[in-house]
Amino acid sequence: MKIKPSTFLLIALINLFSFQLLAQKKNQLESLLEQYSKEYYALNPLQATEAGINDYNNQLEITISEDYIKKAKALNQKYLSQLAVINKAGLTASQLLSIDVLTYKLKSENERLNNSLGFYRPVDQFVFSFSTKFATLGSGAGFVPFNTEKDYRNFISRMKGFQTWVDQAIANMKKGVEQNNTNPRASMEKVPAQLKPLFQGALEMNVFYKPLLKLPTNLDSAAAIQLKKDYSSAIETIIQPAYKKLHDYIVTEYIPKARKTSGLLDNYNGKKEYELWLKYYTTTNISAEQIFNLGLSEVARIRKEMETVKTQVGFKGDLKSFFEYVKTDPKFFPFKTEEEVLDRFRSFLDKMSPQLNNLFNLTPKAKFEVRATEKFRAAGANAQYMAASRDGKRPGIFYEVILDPATYNYFSMEDLFIHEAIPGHHYQVAIQQEADIPEFRKAYFTSAFGEGWALYAESLGKELGLFTDPYQYLGRLNGEIERAVRLVVDAGIHYKGWSREKAIAYVLENQPVSAVEAEQRIERYMVTAGQAVSYKIGELKIIELRERAKKKLGNRFDIKEFHGEVLKDGCLPLIILEAKINRWIESKAAKK
Image: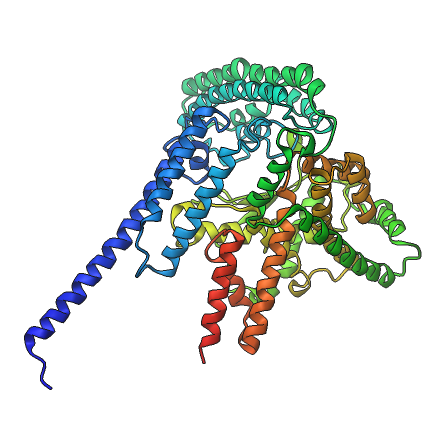
């Protein structure tokens, strides 16, 4: 049968028209996502700076104000409405994933805003607290740039914004006291000691003064003198009075009225709040009861492995005695200087490098460093990772708290390095920032994925050539049981009504840590309800997906490909990650 030339022309026109419609639809989605990021960063200038967008470096969002919450909810609803009417036909897998992730993000944020989660408790002793975070940024140790005179003057403007934040924080805390919605007294009693160095003492010793010790070299002497004068004045007239005001309110008014109990149960609407935090941090609908029981099960399993290590090293005595031995024997404290501790951490990459290629075909370009946590924030801090800058000028940084090198226990160092650096947070965060994905996904973070990946990475230690020392493997088990213990004590504190003392005793019973460390951890969980359980929930989900893939794919399963599939799209809510990996498994299984 002969086809007329006019028919060929008609088919070609239809195909061209279809292609143009599809291209137009894709461009509309990309424009929508790009516009969302622009509006989001305009509302959140500090997050814009963190992402390397410097258009708002002289502004500071007051995220605990009613005005901010109103604008944030309106922005979220605006884009939820637009996403809901997008025709998804013909879109790529990555574009569909962007729609799913942004929809989840916006709904999750609005649920948090609608329920004022944490709104009336803006200050605590943990490193997440904005009063501590702002000091870190002001010290020059964070992502805020101090490269030009304009950078310094921009931060003076942000100092004024912080002054406004302090006034809002105090107003919110006062309302919280009225509503019976406060942080626990035991945790808040740690805050004054953290704030005092920020307003007391010589100006030159203040952490906010540190950027003045390395002024831009291209400033002439007159400009340098004036900038130093103006910046010093801002510290003395804005920063120090603001921190003193916050300190004095907390000491004289807040702490005396703060609740004496540990968990949220005695707070206003505390039971519902805990359920919301669990959903927010785990990106699942897991219940507090399920978390508590899972924790008990995991703790029992890991204790058995610890018993095996105890037998392996020939220790005579029960597990509690073994913990005491590891906590106190001089051989576990080999360091004399802070630099010796840091150098030990730095040596681990050379040790694992030959094996990394067997587990990963997707690795980041960004470099990283190991540093000691600054002394002013060490009291309430834990080890943490700070992401590299997008432009590559600042590496990713693994910060460790080293209060006294002579008392720094070495037994869990390999495990900690894997978690915070490689292939834990540094791999995950840097790969996300370097991925070919929309801007909002480069910056998106969920605790269950990010912390879940870092904990999962710890399980790869033996394959990476580490944990050959049985005590370092005990450190691995300690890292794992810590996250399992969190399930028990977090739900215990906020769901079952456990006291601070009962929770501390549970930590000491199941981990080789000091009483001071146990106390610090429990007081963290007391003010960050739900966050600590996200690690184990995320890790177990990744392990579950890996085992599902191995079972389905058999000898076609490639661990490098699986890790790449988990990491390449950045942080995802666990429900979205599971659906994505399931599609990947089915696609692989269908290929002959």
